[in-house]
Length: 109
Length: 114
Image (cartoon, rainbow over all chains, first blue to last red; front, side):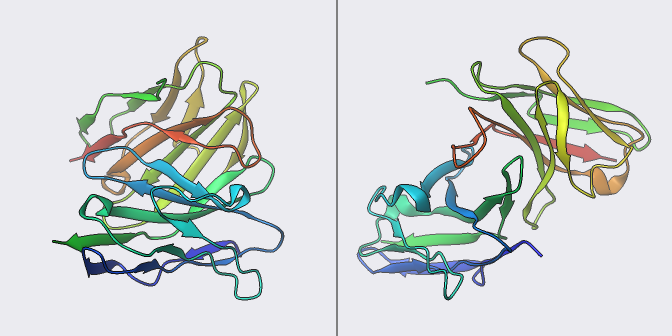
């Protein structure tokens, strides 16, 4: 079964602290993994994808096929990082997205 | 920057009525999607649309739902005989191609069935 699991509903950290948002997936094949972010009152937007192996706004995510994980990390959180973060996988003929339940990141001053 | 546009932003309808949610995808995109998010739950895939036909649909997308691209720009989701449990945020998305290309989302339409 295709599934994305984000175990934390809420992650609260202080500004400057490291952040790790967990994501595990289940997929029989080679999925594409993504992190989408939704800032307050804004639309869902792509943060990063595993295939591009890039760092966006200081965030990185490494695909670990052995652990079927795609955790999102940032060494020093900023207040503007506060948002809802969704891990998603894409697969199949139409590349629909399968989302996790999301983690609300709250960065305290 | 081009973006996906959805109208209306909020729709209130009585149970049993039909609603049409509208979306204008980004103009050069070829793949179109509808997702929904019931309050407090995950974003769920409903349907994908390519080359003027449904390419994939989820179990949620039963005979109550239909999609259409009536002209070159609009992409609509029709929900017939709405039920209370249809209350959700409905997101439209489009992508240039399939594969790992980015899906661009609209702001969503909040549907409230009373």
